[in-house]
Image 1 (cartoon, helix red, strand yellow):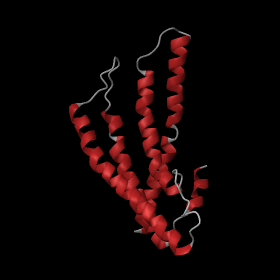
Image 2: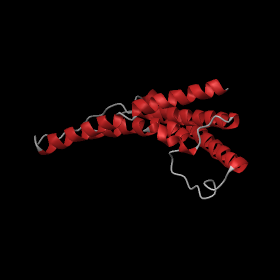
Image 3: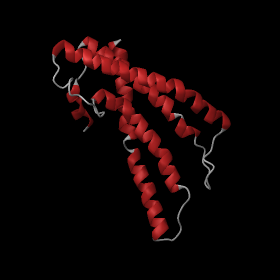
Image 4: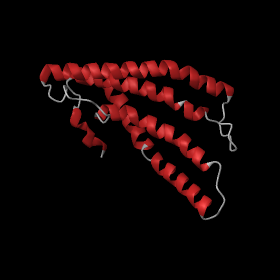
Length: 171
């Protein structure tokens, strides 16, 4: 189980490493839109919409690894002062809640993504790109979040979880 747990974390670390570069694509798209609108007097219909479609995967694929790093916003008034067994129990409760959230989100998002794919859903804008590829990232990210929460649960129970100071790994 520990080997599988490390594999899930490695997968999410890799997706995080790739997805963080998408912010540069978003910046370039918006820069192009501003330049073409104000310098060339020729606004695009596609750049803002594509930036929006790229933002979804950027945001969603970073979440599972961020959970592993402990980088999500948390109200940790009690858990910050907890030590020993209580700290472990609180961590496990948080991870199980994150897994439940991921599975519930997957349950509701997967049929919507499948429906979007089967209909060949588009944005109905002037550019009218297919949007189902962007919608497929929500159930994928939900599954990866649930798997990461379960992987971290295994790591906590085995005593190999990096703990709350793991955020330094991301830099």
